[in-house]
Image (cartoon, rainbow over all chains, first blue to last red; front, top):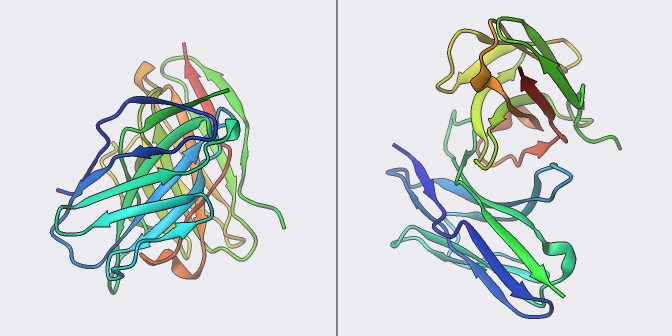
Amino acid sequence: AQTVTQSQPEMSVQEAETVTLSCTYDTSENNYYLFWYKQPPSRQMILVIRQEAYKQQNATENRFSVNFQKAAKSFSLKISDSQLGDTAMYFCAFTTGGSGATNKLIFGTGTLLAVQP
Amino acid sequence: DAGVTQSPTHLIKTRGQQVTLRCSPKSGHDTVSWYQQALGQGPQFIFQYYEEEERQRGNFPDRFSGHQFPNYSSELNVNALLLGDSALYLCASSPRGGGGNQPQHFGDGTRLSIL
């Protein structure tokens, strides 16, 4: 079975500091994609960053970067220079690739991040 | 460019009733997926529609059904509502048949409360 595990239910960080959110996953597939989504109180799920499993280089989007360790099946999110607007629930998610695969997402249980002023 | 739109935003029903939720995909998208997000949990995949057919289904009972129209919009129907069906229902759309490499764009969701 394919699963995603987020072991940190809640985290807190001071504004302008750096925080890392953890995620591990389990799959027997070799071709897959990993995502971090942000869900603020407004409810809309917003894509933060995406990583293709076949790429060794870690993805980066402005203040957001990932540490992708394929052998360890680990996919952590680092947020630099945290801002008050980063306060949200963060979900790690996974989908398989390959011919005929759909983009059905498997989500973790989420980490609630609070950025303190 | 309109994103994914869902209606209604909030709905209250009683046990045993039936409900229909609606979703219009982002312009240019042809694939719609539905997710159920219980309070404090991650979203769970219900099913995906492409070319007006259910292409993949998650672990949900037959009480959950759907439909996709020729304009790519979609409906989620839930019959014989149970208290446990109370959740946020998210619709997501993607382009080009929703292959594994296609990102999903989410709507704001419909909050369904069962009394």
